[in-house]
Image 1 (cartoon, rainbow, N blue to C red):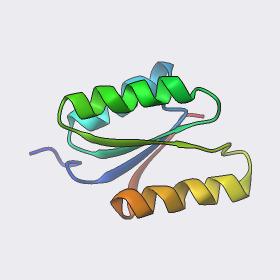
Image 2: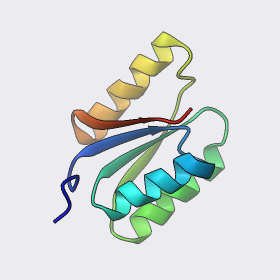
Image 3: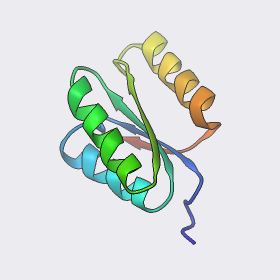
Image 4: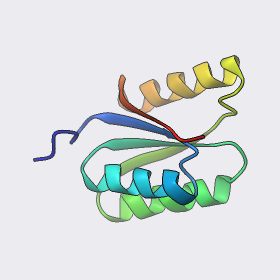
Length: 92
């Protein structure tokens, strides 16, 4: 079993590029993945579908992490969905 299996991972900028790759890898390792996006909602949902398609757990949450109020709401949404965030990938 992976050391990160079951842990909650929040990936900012997780809808494309490196962030997408990290999110998919975390999902494959058993993490519950929160994919943050600012504008690329369709891409973020595609990543969620990809992770769920392999048996993983994932959600997408829109937030501009340069705004403190939106960043706080992002963490709140992650915690409501999966519990305390244990892994943060600050890719945005």
